[in-house]
Structures are given as structure tokens and as C-alpha cells.
Image (tube, rainbow, N blue to C red):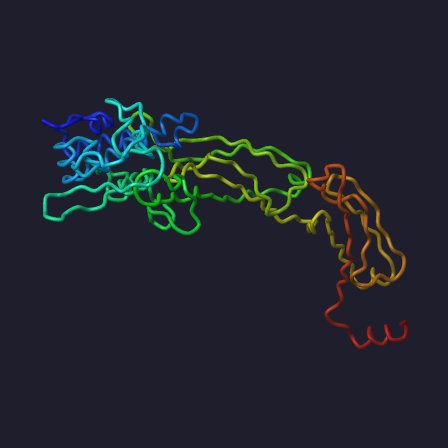
Length: 367
């Protein structure tokens, strides 16, 4: 006969449940109520905290034995009853704040503010030790990292944990602030960002376009809590004038992981073009002349990226590196849709690789 059943009720199990049943019940409840799956439902976050802290006690045989003997209130006070001067009607900070079967509000020694460590004895003389509840996210992470309920996909669920640590570290943000029972709250790794290349033609970047991208993402089945893979279609809008390196961002569309759901960034890549080389908003085109043309004159038809054609000709000698600029015939400027860069035509002269003695003599006479 146990002193109370509050923690068992939270997990929806019998006080006679085996350790394996406790693990399975926690796994199901934690996955169902995790805050990242219930961003619009604050009550689910409270249930997540409650089931995590219930599991933290019940999964430890010694803690469970003491809890079964004395009940939750006295367990938190180390089996010694409420401490002198304890008061306040608030619930257990970070969990068990109310709405739990049996009601947890107004427990002795559970003041609504500050941090208190509760001690319990394991039976030996002077055997009191400090006990404080862990961060619910840390309990959740440790559960899966240690094998969870042995369902075979736990390693997959947390394969992308930052640094492989469930206790937080550099570059991480805190989900639970320093408040309530026990030690400083551990921090949860930030949601990771996945980057994928998005190759585009210069014409697509000039005109702008829309693309549909099918991705596969890992998530959890609401019914069983197991890992599953689903398809998702993303509509990607490419605005005129986007440059290589531009990031098109989608929040919360990737895999579900400890810190939340991954963000996905598509990074624009420019495919090589047969005529133009892009230089910011300008386009550079090269015209190759042989030496005869460069010296005596030449004519070329110059196409623009939007299909217009210009005639460019020179009657006299043209040196290597000569350029002709066509204003406002380059790429659009994405942040200034009504403005465009220039198109620059640059001449390259192809010199002969060898000359005969006679040719050299004649050139000397002419030049």
C-alpha cells in the first residue's frame, strides 16, 4: 500500500508498475506534451514538466521506495515533515503547479519564490543528501540518450544533439530560467539550421521565379510517439536581382529535435552563363577579336539578358581591355526593383602564336 499515487497518476500507471512500464509511460507522455510540439498550448508544457519530474523520482528505485512509504509532501521534506517556517501556497516550481490528479498546490514547504533544496535520508546514519529536480528538458534528453524505453529509435531521435550533451553548454540558450526548486536550470541546445544549395540560372535571377521543393523531414507520430518521416512541399519565391549567397529562410520546417524543429535555409547559387559574368548588379560580356580585326575595324551584335540586341562596331584599332558600357542593361537590384546595373562589353584580342619572317618584315614596314 503506497502513501499516495500522485506521481503514478501523472504518468497514467498503477503503483505496481514495473520499471519498464514507467519508462514507456514517460516516453509516451513526454513526446505527446513536449513544448516544441505544442507551441500554442501552454498547458501541454506544464504536463511535460510534471511527467518529467514524476519520472525522475519513480525511475530511481531508492527515491521511489521512499516516496511510496511517505508520500510526495514528506518525500520533498526528506521524510521529516514540513520544515519550520515553511509556507506559501504555490505549486512545485517548474512542475506540479496544479491541474494534476490529486492536486499538488499548496504543499508544505513549497514557497512560490526562491530556491530550496530538500533532503531525504536513505536509512544510514547521517545519510541525508541533497535532492533537487532537474530541468525537464535534461530529464527528457538523458532518458533517450540512455536508451529510453528500448524501442530502437532513441538514438535516431537525438542523433543531432549539439555536442552530444543534455546539460547545455556554450552557444546554447536557456529554456527554463533560474527559479524554483534545486540547482540552476540546465540549458537546452539551440535549434539547428540546415542549409541547402539552390542553383539558379542568371535568367531566373533576372526575371524572378517560383519553385516548389519537396523535402523529407523527421517528426513524431502523435499516437505512438515513434519517429516517422514525412514529405513536405515548400514554395520558394526567388525575387528579381537575388545574388549568389542570398538565403531564403523557412522556420520550423525541418526535423524535430531536442531544441525544437529545425530551420531550413536555401542558399542561392548562380549557374555559369555562356555569355555573361555577373559583377554585383552589372553584367560583363567578352568579345574576342583577332589581330586583323583589332587593327582594321570590326562589328558585333551584342545581345542583352532580356533579349534586346545592340550593334557595336569600331573602325580603327582597338586595344585589349577596351570596354563599352550600356547603362541599365544589367541585373535588377533586389532592394530597388526599378533600378538596374549596367552591361559592360570588354574586348579581348587574340594574337597569333607565330609569324613568318616575311610577315614580320611587312608588319615592320606598315607599323
